[in-house]
Image (cartoon, rainbow, N blue to C red; front, top):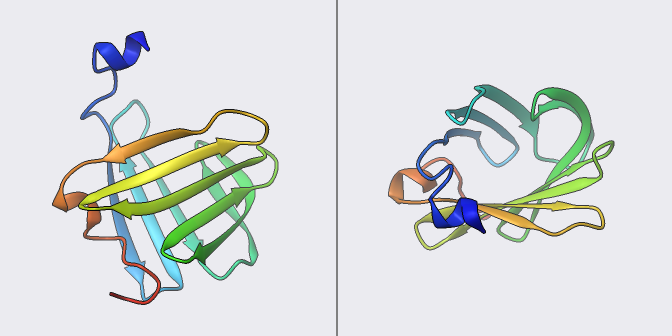
Length: 118
């Protein structure tokens, strides 16, 4: 609560998302301490992806207009979706409380398109 009150982390991280149709996505994250690039296929198949600094067995697929990434060994799920002009990334650890990161502004949504392409 104290971190939220003082705006800790606000405006520190940026993500550039590149889509190849609806089946492949690259997320370049900068700011917030460590830069990273995550590339994934969005067909639900098991794949090895660099997640938060370590290579993990993951599955990524569309659930309606949300992109869901399930990380096996960390037992967590990330849901990426649009809320108006904001992109939300909801992180839900198994048995824990969810946290939502909100990327604000029209620049946040240029790279993420719903599965139906609209």
